[in-house]
Amino acid sequence: MKSGKAVGPDDIPVEVWKCLGEAAVEFLTSLFNRDLENLEKAYYRVPREELWYCMRKSGVAEKYVRVVQDMYERSRTVVRCAVGQTEEFKVELGLHQGSALSTFLFAIVMDQLSEEVRQESP
Image (cartoon, rainbow, N blue to C red; front, side):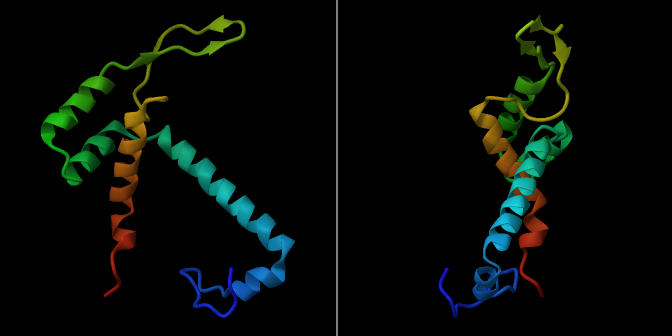
């Protein structure tokens, strides 16, 4: 970080962060870790209806929305651990774990949900 530069969106000059030293590093690390934890929670809690809405609003062709809906319809899973696995159960919320498509779908949802925030002020 170079001194004397314009402030960013937080309106905090770089010199403040430098002056705070290790305390600033700990604070920012804690802040970013919390944000990542919240994003992870959001990833597993995306309502399906919100997903379909965001896909359509982003301009995804209806045939692709339907393909993804078919993938998510009647989703079932089990939980495996060292002592065995659970009975199969329905998954009706969140995105599929381990699917490359899920990351893209989450980006679509976040893009749509943050659209108003990103609009230029009048």
